[in-house]
Image (cartoon, rainbow, N blue to C red; front, top):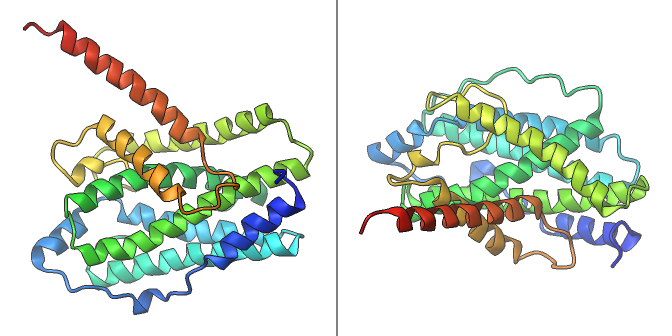
Length: 283
């Protein structure tokens, strides 16, 4: 299959549309939580940011989807917009059901270029999903919340996984359609968008442990879930979960590679640094 071909477009769009899960947030098996579980759920500091990001995601994707001329791609993108908006509905339902304090902020303007807004959002979602995979695994293994809550959010994470696979294939197809087929140029474009997403992540980190009032959701406070948390452990879990979750997709389709490769390089450095420190310690 040639990336950017009609066959490529058909396969990544069909796979996305066929895997849609037509659930309704109101009908999910929301559990009754005891006081301890409620306190833990309410203590998670980024619910306002998550809600804002999902609301804005739905607005961006639906607005851009309406501009697409190709009927199959438009159908797939509009379906993603519906799913992003449904994520916001799910979060609002959870916030109301469990008494979580999460003020809704007005949405910022989408910008002059909907294409740029959609691409910027897509790369940011790749970053958030990669980090979210690891944090979710750590929190679930630590039983930070009751399993029924994790089961609900596992459904949401799987949708995010579908979104990023669809996005990287759409981006490759779109760049080929625009006669930007050189792989090195794809890498430069991806790096530019990822740098922007990482910059927003670092801004979120700098806001510290207080309730987040920012705009771009990334799971930056993983130590809220488990004592003894380390950055190296998070990166290892992110890589392992990324590999596991990507196995369910058509392996002929493109998958996000930039962040896993960057993380693998970082892990090598951290392991070498740990080995060097161990050797320098007195016996």
